[in-house]
Length: 502
Ligand code: B12
Ligand code: SF4
Image (cartoon, rainbow, N blue to C red; front, side):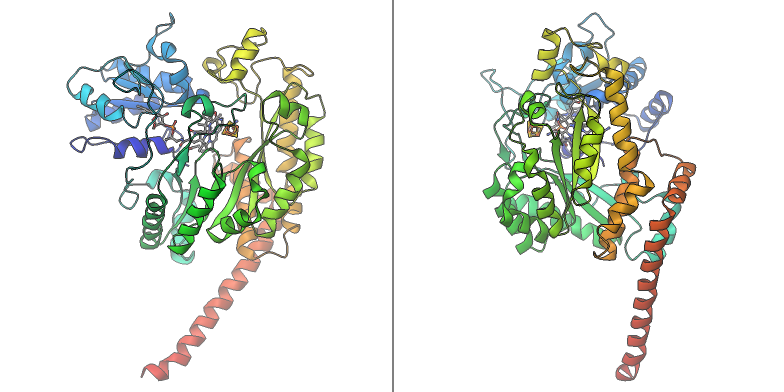
């Protein structure tokens, strides 16, 4: 899925400038390729955004671009907390000519204007005339021209399958997952999270009309392109104000603006039956729930004791009854975790309706209360872990297990959750559901596995399909049978209609 910030800043750029977007995940380039692209296109200013985990790579790209004399501006959650690092003020190498701190909706047009005049400043801060921090309002909100944007690099349909699906797949030649925000901010302040510090605990919303309009334009694009579009509401906690969420969902339904959507909602807010009914009626298909741990002591440690492990099963049942499934996210290596945490968590998961679980290890991001606590306690083993990025490896010592043990627990949880056997069990448990729901579930499981197990080549995919051949063939056979039956029915209807037409 592409990142929203680049589409947003593109639409906030003064119209006399042209903006080209490259997503390093969707369209990876080497330093040389990127520099060549910049030269070929005559690009005069490069903006780079990165999360902490990608920032070392972003710095390498920035270094190569600056080396050929093109200025670089960096923004996003990492450089906001580590601006000195990006600017080389911490005795390290300088990577950026300028940094945009915090939300850049209002500073970006100024940055572009300064760059055009050759007067780029080093630091851009969202402050008012009195120098006080100012959070941009989301009302009004810019109109992102999704209907005309080139989204080719983000088509999730694998290249090998595109031409076949264009001919036979009834609108499956393209599939785009589009990020939309309906609001910003979360007041909960979980210890490991950057959101409360970055967006502040002031919650801001777009108007319902502006969100509905964006959905309607996306729906039109999907229809015109004979493709599929799903939406990810990237709000940190989509139902943080339940009354407002219900009113938005009602407006989406009333306008017929439903598209399949995903959003992040904390479990405590999913107790409300009416909310879950509206989620279902407005197109909600997958809800991302930060469960983090099944141990209340861990949750209390990270200031997330509004999560109640005792109610996870009921929440998931409530969703599943309406054909809505959950992506459940877990963190291992928390202070009360001991070896065996994977088995204990997997046992709970096995008792729930099928979910897509994701597992990571507790990671202290700069600027979070967790980073400050672990630093003060002298527990960080790699205080600048992002410069020495090691996926799924902790950068501090957990209290009741070792870093290696935490890594093994994460590995076990991924391996077990996405084994061919688990995939088959998950599909069996929803055998009474419609074929498209089961297909969606299987495809999602095959893709989600890729978060942990690298699966980028055709060979990886062939192996994966071979391992999961039973459910794949069974569902393919069933789908093909239905497809043939529907073709037969429609040609019979054709024959019946002919005498009437003549
Ligand atoms: C949607 C989302 C996801 C989605 C999709 C990611 C995607 N492709 O968009 C999913 C669920 C997949 C995801 C996964 C992860 N995410 Co995430 N995610 C988000 C979320 C909720 C929204 C991002 C967003 O679009 N925000 C709205 C836009 C408008 O805000 P923004 O990106 O910050 O951009 C503004 C400014 O920062 C600035 N800006 C940003 N970039 C740039 C660049 C320039 C040049 C300029 C001038 C300005 C600028 O301008 C923008 C407008 O004001 C954020 C939290 C949040 N609210 O931001 C977390 C967040 C970005 N994710 C986070 C994390 C940790 C992760 C994971 C590592 C979690 C995990 N353990 O697996 C993975 C990593 C996945 C990966 N490898 O990419 C952290 C990052 C913290 C950090 N310091 O890096 C965040 C901040 C949440 C948190 N809990 O702290 N994520
Ligand atoms: S509820 Fe989610 S977004 Fe809000 S502070 Fe906690 S982890 Fe961050």
